[in-house]
Length: 278
Image 1 (tube, one colour):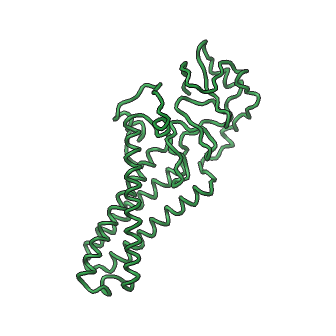
Image 2: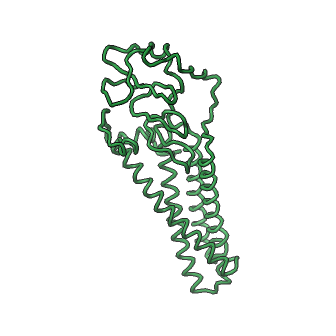
Image 3: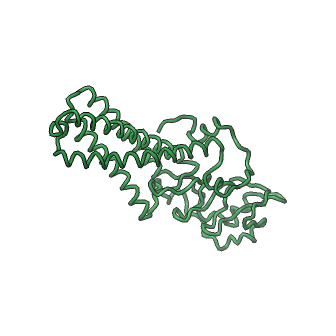
């Protein structure tokens, strides 16, 4: 919980009675809370399912259309292992980004008891979110999809059906990086496979008929190119946000920093928890 004396044009109240704590429903006890975080949003769930289906489609084309029919056993084994390893890491990162609490502020904690427990000094102020009835920490923003205030919220991403915030930005960055890598890998393999098929007989370079092979490869090429561009841009903007210690929302609102910015390296350590593993 961060308290700041700086007025930033929000609804600010300095005393518990002005915050209308009686209108807030106290948050449930920790014993009644589930351990899994999942947003029940139809659009987000559909996008998440489509993401997994696209990765499985790419794996299907890479393995059964390009690698299995190949006569070069070493080429097939190395590229098959590499592609599936990156695909697994991408889906694992997506799973963690989707089911991790992004940094939600306890809902309905703007109660009289909690406000009095802060022991505010004269001149100190707290921010109350009128939508989720929570005491809003500094740099937290309300998400209309998650229906919660999220600490250091960058944006809500339907592809992971979750907000990207303080606690799960690491997994989102890894997800975009792995998707960009498998997209680039797939594009390279599609290029080599087309050259191989042009030099050889099309009926021998794939287990499928030539028209089916061409359609599957073109669809994979389009998918890989599209997601290579998209995830590369997202990866770059996320790394830039971490290094500049400024979230996407703060950058869009052109907010004047009221917090002490950290260095790029410190920002990376804070986002990744001191390591870069899952």
